[in-house]
Image (cartoon, rainbow, N blue to C red):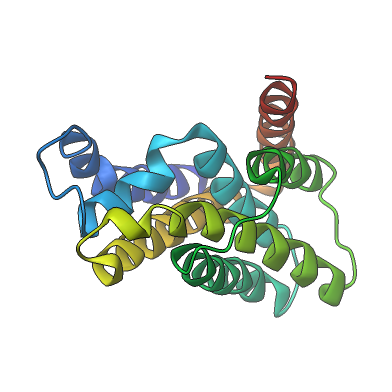
Length: 193
């Protein structure tokens, strides 16, 4: 896949999500699918971490390419259920900011740790993001639709990062690493804020 096709795929994934922003203000399905889709896209911390998971997955070999996004989504779904039940962890926002930093650094150095370690890191951070999403469930009349929405948006962000990174020629790998550094910098800013 060439650079042009990769950019088209990434832009296509992003364009599919544009209607979310039209519904991001009050009065538009605040308790269902569109609210769920909007949640990961409306917070820079969620957006950067989820996009970086896709970038990092694309840098992996073998089954880790597919497993990292799947484990993040599975951890997020479990966290969402826990958050819905009232489970909370101390310093949750700090953990989410740390995920932005960690995934950014992992992309920046194109880290390939043992698969079990990569999955544990990804699942743990997915769990934290899910708890944050789930904590918004109780006020909603349709938590299932909300959950489907945030799973769709997360998967789209993973896919966009993956498509961008995999579509670039080998000589453009530095661009992917630079995107990792940008994410890591944002993570530092979030932690300092």
